[in-house]
Length: 171
Image (cartoon, rainbow, N blue to C red; front, side):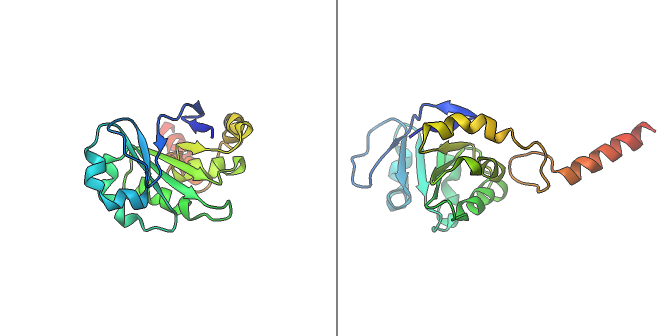
């Protein structure tokens, strides 16, 4: 499954572990929320990066105490119509100041890339190589947005205010 990270197709350094798979002593691993919450201390003590696959039906409050110790939080889109992971992403970036990688996984479609970026995602597991290759063109399609979001871009109304202030300052 191709991974798009930082705007380009990347090699995924994380290995996805099944709940019953033995835990390697080192290396980057992605574990399920259930496995993580069963014994977070043991998982966080091992050598190597740790990521958690967090379902959109699970409350973020269980994850928040560990955010600064996780390299990746992978939020799941079980279907393209289910947008709860967008809300989770915004909360993680804006309320909880998640600095690590925020990955979209599951039904990640190319026509949702822009919205996912705006919500705070910076990595995307896609099913098709063609979707991964189209990422760059898709995200450049829009340059101005009206809604403020977690991606740090200045929304159109605020841009207008900035222009007015800069113009009045030069008078």
